Image (cartoon, rainbow, N blue to C red; front, side, top):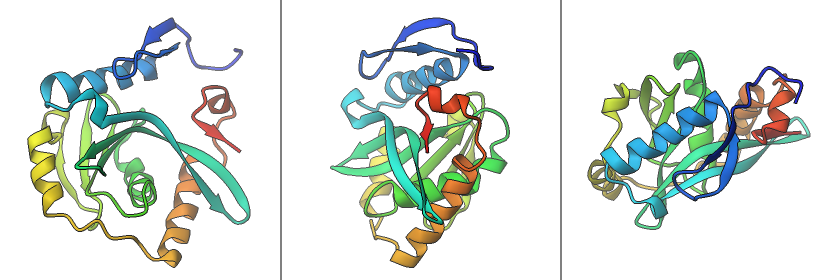
Length: 185
């Protein structure tokens, strides 16, 4: 490929059974999928991996990948976003993604580097817990989701969140990510 991502071969997606390019990042994503299903009680059909949303900023449009959407009671209740490195620097873009991923903002967003995680309350933007072990179980998320009001954000707020997400995730991003099907311009 000629980029800085080490291709390790092919891997079978734990959730869908699809064959994917095996990279270090994909191995972390597969580990997260197994954690959600095997340890936290989620059902594979409730997990929607590698979905994309389109964002626009200043007349430019791009796609951002949602690593895993978690659907409970027919609503996206939580998203999981993977990114290597610092979690703190990814909080704002993860919140923007969680506010734009559906016609309503979702209850929780998880940002993880595969070794650590921060769980964010999307409405307030607060970190409510940290660590992979603090990710909510299916039962915990279902309870939380029952008390959550899935309200849409305003059109102006959606425009601001789109600009934030575009700036953090697309603008100036490495073109090798285009080959990885993570982003497009």
